[in-house]
Image (cartoon, rainbow, N blue to C red; front, side, top):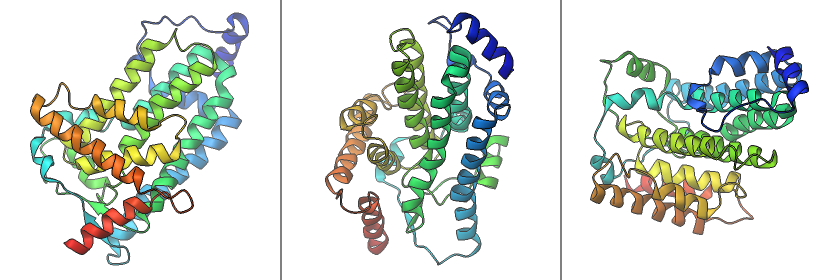
Length: 301
């Protein structure tokens, strides 16, 4: 597959992908075969996967098996009750990994080998994202109340593999924000921001849907979204500045909640995001406002 893409790129420069083509239709497996068929990309991917497993699974399971070493803070908010438990959102919630891999598939098919350097950076920073969030997790875990629901296989999987100790900041939200902003930056660098504007909008809408899904399946709280948005401004302020964060928040729960409830949720999220941002000290660890937030709640409880 790598050779076919390279040959087509050599012939045409850029493959013929229409502006109407949806990223949702891209096979995630295509990116897998491209990445692991190329030594440069494979090396980055292996390191990234290792980082993800260590920072997400190892840290959580060690904490679950040996409790008490790191404090665990409940981060539920009264506004969470405005968002009903909706198992039908489970598929959207679990799509967050395939979400960014499909974006890679699209880039590979659009640009071939010319995109390998940028794709490698995209993959590498996903691992860095997990390590970045772990700067908070290793000092203070966080959790929410979630119903024990296993009537659908997807929820059985969730309960089996996720000890539910990494809520603030939400990695789901961080990953999907990284996906749409990085994709936009890449196609802009390639001179195709206007051409692929529909795909940029599709990814942003997908990021919003997954961010909503984490609350509809009760894996997170409204507080977790604000914390994730703050984390992403710290991680990549050039791609997710305060203005972008405010725009992102303004689009949450517009269609999925009653207008008054949606407004209350959005108002809280952006207010807490600004609170975290105002508490940031550039000379100190970026995660301190989140850790202080967790410690205050832990002490209060």
